[in-house]
Length: 602
Ligand code: ZN
Image (cartoon, rainbow, N blue to C red; front, side):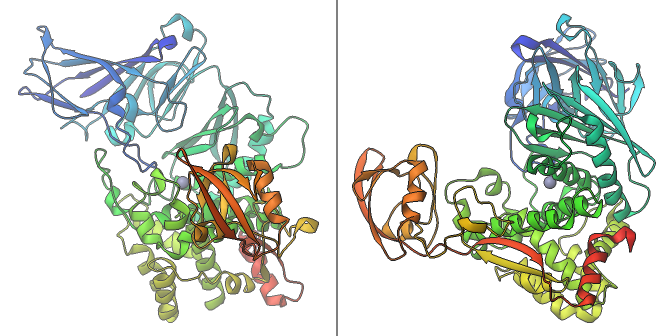
């Protein structure tokens, strides 16, 4: 085997993995070895090499010198015969993006542990996982990397066709809970690590139809033989990372379905949405991907203006998959849509930054958000999802349902699903080719929604399927939208235009709001309003008790300096959205809505 890794938990208490890499035919003048700077799917330079604690090399004769070739590069040589490089790697990042090891479990992505032998990356790679530390007695192994040796769920040897495949199959090691289900004839596993009291049979019953809805969108046969959901359940956490045959997820314990609870709680619905999202990525971004990711340059940023299509459209289909599968009802789906609209409307930056720019700059903007993010930037996830919604409903309406976003993504899949890479203009060109009679309308939509900052035609898109977009002010700090608001809606009350963080510190000051116009800044420590002490709990209540146009005197500490500002309260912005069915919708619009939400029954 050209490149062979031996991975073992070396010292779980010190969070150290040991990795021994053997290169059979190293470059005799000096074999370069590099650890990736980022992990595909998470667009930020993370410099995983900083976690390498020790590293040394030897060949058949003895020790081989290791020269440095940069922050993530070692050059071993000269050497004779096979080269062996041994490294210890610190693994104490409890996220889906890196590696983690303690006495309860181990998790790793190849990008954190497996040095790339430059020049050999296109050849086969083997990985032998050994569990010989006493702490790991009884541990099992979950991964989708193809196994060539050892019993299922045990340690053994695994093989990848190349380095790109090797690093796309994370490993979970431990005493996880395990359940499985079948979707469209394909075997799916779920493993859950952590202290949990959850109904995994229920989870499988709900995941199966969601997976089937996504499989049917692209065709009966999914592009993998089996699929694995690997879940880490913790006290507080949320996130996922997509891989070609699996996903790594982190969630709160309470997000998982609890035994004896029949309803789908908000938390469980979010978790199902996360599963649906990462699963959809098995098509959209893992195989159908921007051309700039073919191949991935794992050592520098890969800029694409298409993340709105790969993350935003995936976000559109994640919740849509929940209702199309019948796991949630349409009313529950409208609530999710209303919340997404609310998130976008509450960001002034949607009028400043276009989606193609937000996509291109994800590395330095979305992934490195500061206090000004909502004023200057837009999320290609949430606004991208709404672009997907608008494009879908407008296409259905304009073409009498001969075309839809489903058809666009099916066409993209047919053309570039082989991994050859979607060009930067590929999504728009595909939509135009499918609806040539509406080319001008589509071009104008892309100009405004993707390349510009025009208001999205949400209300008219929803009207085409007999739905109404309703807007109202927020009822309080915890109001995420999606619901009518009920008795707590008190429009006409004062608003300061801030988000207050812990201890009364201003986390965000929104452009154009009362606080901004008065001169307040994010980071200011609010201490008094109208000469009376305020804290984060009382501020919103007291501001809401006053009518708009009231002038309030605010005392803050900016750094260690006391400052006073006079702010004129504004009416609360009607940026909280909820969506409902229009009782006066035409029968045609209602029928269209049913075909949109239940395509398999159409
Ligand atoms: Zn995603």
